[in-house]
Image (cartoon, rainbow, N blue to C red; front, top):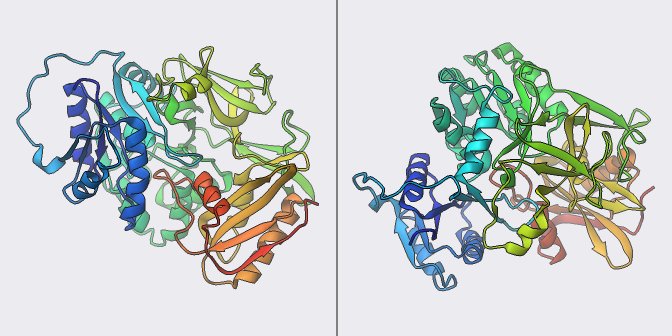
Length: 508
C-alpha cells in the first residue's frame, strides 16, 4: 500500500538504484539495509530482523540467495508480509498515477550503528534536494557535467548513496560504482579506477586513505592528476593520515590541495560543512588550556600537552551551525560543546520513533550528539558526547586513545576500540579492546599499550582485552562499532587470546 516501508537488501548497485527509484515512483517508502558482509548469516539475520521489526517493514526486496533467510524471519517480524526476489521483478516501465511531492519521504536511511543500534532516518525529497544542491554547488564541490565520480562506498550508507550516486544523478554527470568488497580486498582498485576513468571526484572515510598508504605498493601506471576533490568524512579525520596519503601518491600526480575534509551525518541527509576547495587541510594545534569547555585531556608531545584537529569548514549555504553547552545555549568560538545544525537538510525525524525524534529535534535545531568547536567560523570536530570517557574529572575522546594504540607494532590497524566501563559511584574504568597482528606476544602487547597511553595521556588502562581476529566490528562506512563492542565486553562475550591484563590503578 502507499506509504508502506519496503526494505531493500541488494548488494548490486544497478539493482539497488533501479529498485529504489521504482519504489519511490510506486508510492511506497524505500529503506536501504546493508547486505551481509561476512559469512555469519545467523548473526546478520538477528540484527536485521530487529531493524525490520522496529521499522514495521511490510516487504523486503532482496536476492534469490538471501530470500529464504528473510522468509524465515517473517515468523518474528509480524508486519513483514512479502519477501520478493529482485531477479523476478523486471518488467516494462509504466507511467506512475501520481508523482511524489517534495514533502513525501524519499527514503529511510538507517544510521551506521557505530554508537548504537541503527535508527531509521526519514528524509523527504525536499531534504534530499536541498542537501545535494548545497554540497554540489559553488560552495561545495562545484560539480558539473564534466566531472567523473568514482566510488566504492556502499549504497546503504549516506556518503555512497547521496554523495556519490544520487549526487551524480542530480547533476547529470557519470559516476563509476565499484564493489566495496573489491576495495577492501585490493585498495589499489580504487586508485586504478580513478586513473582509468580520469576520475575528478571521490569521497572516502579516513580509514580508506590509510589503507591505501599501507597496502598499495605498486604505483606504476597510476595517474591521479585529474582528482580535484578528494573528500574525507564519515569518521574522525586524522591529519597524519591525509599527509601520509599525499606524500605517498604525490609522484602519481595527487595534490594535497584536492583534500576536502568535511562533516555531516545521516540526520542531515549527508553533508553539513565544507571548507574552501583547493586549500590544504587546515589543522588546529591546541594545548590543554587553549579550549574552553569540558576539561579535555590531550596527549603529551615532546613534553607538552597538545592535540591536532582538522577543520571541516563552514556551514553549507542556507544552513546554520551552532555550538551549544549542556544547557542548550550557544557558546562563543573556541568553546567545546555539542554541534547543533539547522536548515532544509535536517531530517523529518526518526521513522516510528517519536520520543527519540523529540529528543533530537528541538526548537528548530538538530542535536547531533557530536562534540566540536568553532574557530574563525570553521568547525573542528572533537568526538561524540556519549563516547566520552571521564576519569578524575577529565574527559578523554576514545578516538585519540585508539589512534595512539593503532600505531603500535603488533596491533591490527583499524581494529582498536577504547571506551569507559561505568561502575556505580566510581570513575569510568578505561578499557581497550584490540585485535593483534600476531607478531607480538599478548603480554608484551598489553604492556606496550599501557605504556603508550600512560606516556601520552597520563592515563592508566584498567583492562586490555586482546581478542580474536574479527571481534572488533566495523560499520559499512568503516567506523569501529564502539557501542556494540562495549556491550559485548560488558556481557562477558569477548573471548581473549593469551592474556587479559587487569589492574586497579588510576590515571597518573
